[in-house]
Image: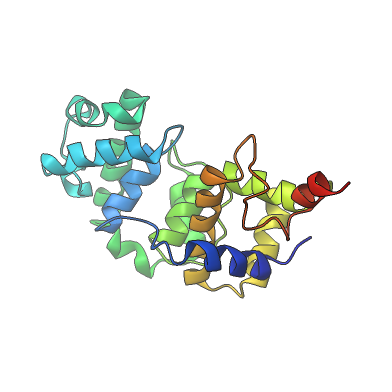
Length: 218
């Protein structure tokens, strides 16, 4: 398996520090982590803009809102009724139990996992995003882009999610800042070069990627 520190160094040299997650508050990150499921970030930005326009981006405001009022403002995110229901329910759970998401910073990682994993609409990727970007816990977010990139870098070997996560945490020395930017760089690489039909010739990882090197060999 390729060293994640080397991969990250190459990606950071190319993309720089991407300052992800783009949000003004932790409430906005949480809402965005639900809205981004099964849609593009452009659609999420439109939905968040709709919530902000009507002062409905805080968990306190969402918890007091009707689901229909939320769903009208997040139509661009797709599955908007389902997402509105989840966001309102999660907001109510947090506000009722902890008053705010920032009050939850004192909880242990295990307590956070236990709370969020029991909420409808919070899968592993969303949970990891919440832990990393809101609570600054050292977690490697594994999404479709990461799986695709690592599978090609390590080609033909197969690498499971747990192997990727453990290796990345070890190689990046549990640095939260590096883990955030590494994930952001992975997303950017997946959108620009390592697409379903990859552009290996121009990819910044072409000299680290077994798949790219295999394609270029005689």
